[in-house]
Image (cartoon, rainbow, N blue to C red; front, side, top):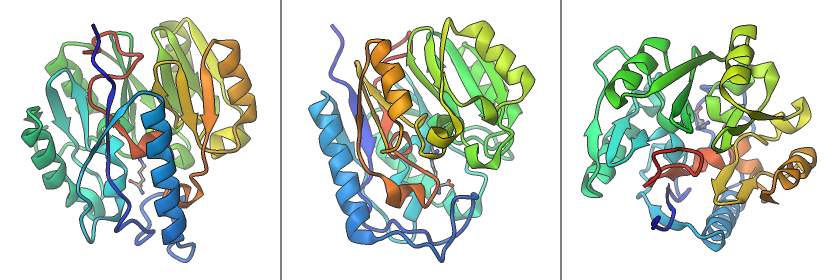
Length: 275
Ligand code: ARG
């Protein structure tokens, strides 16, 4: 029997737009703290109601983006491949992520110096294939190495639009063989690779992609997104999912939404190796 879904989140105590490392971020467009706290806790409640057990990482003063736990690591069974952040501003997170994961019994692996790899933000299993976004944050050699380490096929996908700088902003595995994606974030080769390796692709339009429709958290048949994704929700219903929306505007200001705020610890529903 499968265990209860486990999701790592980090409370937004020290969250804010304190630097600019993606095109969404503008320090003059600050997040409203009480609203961010409310939005984060509403997301936590919705995921709990969907059946997940939420684990908490302690927030750290001076590390505002630690809330985006998707970037802590790539989880595979009881292994965690730690992120190697591209930007100086986030490198300080690595030690706290490693500490928490080790304490929880994960075997923590680290890519060699010089690699850039941003965990579940850029590497997502669908079935037994790892879909891997590169160029803006993670690099292609890191994904090849990850594939070798885990013994899984990797499909590298170049991200071509700076608004979709992490793969989880434009691609979301929903179940075996089915995923949502925003075509505008990929090049022709990437689009062809997605079409070849997935039986069903739900296309998200540009307006809803900008509302982070693809940055969805899947817990069983429940799919949680930011507000402003009605067409995507209709498509999800047609495929038998139960979509729900919750406001995440304060996190969008830093270039993140529902999925970025979570790290699935027992394997995503779409991954064939789920524990
Ligand atoms: N401000 C953060 C960054 O630019 C947002 C990270 C969003 N995380 C994600 N998995 N897409 O790194």
